[in-house]
Amino acid sequence: MPHTETPTVLTVPNLVSISRVVLAVGFLALDGVPVRLALIGAASLTDFLDGWLARRTKVVSRFGALIDPVADRFFVLCVVIAYVMGEQLTAWQAVVIFFRDIMSLIGWFTARNVSWLRPIRFRARPLGKVVTGLQLLTFVAVLVAPATVDGLVFAVGALGLLATVDYTLMLWRERVR
Image (cartoon, rainbow, N blue to C red; front, top):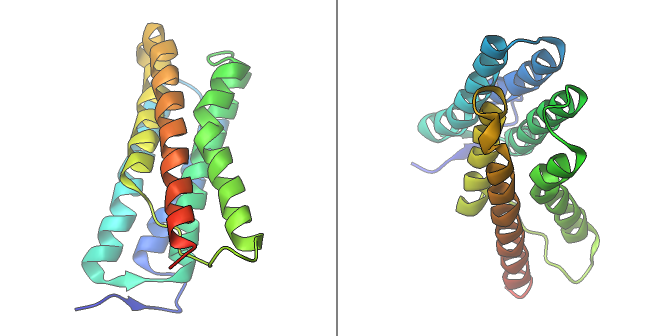
């Protein structure tokens, strides 16, 4: 049975995605290792759960396709801000962690505004999912294994660069179809 697009905004998968925005604000407002670990865990769970629920119930919407990555990036941004403000991450580490997200945003605007690029639907790609998982692991490491953070940030940056190249090549290939 194919997915049917629903005009309804308040679907269960969308509410699960929106919950990440609340978790992000909670991360900024609350402190303490156990609380922040729980918030990262909950955000990770909702990131998996929203897509799983959408596929399982075959309920997709334009709003859901938009809010999921926006909620992901908002959570990452809030965590990075909290860690930089708490001096748990340096500014250079924050830039490296957020590099792929900045490049994705630039790519999205480019794809929407360059007339000779065919409009395409952006979808998560496997390498992008790995980068997101590695970002979340880095956020946990800040709290429980700070000595590993530099290596994880390097890995996020390297894979983020590869993911950016992957998305760019996909966009380039799709322009001619």
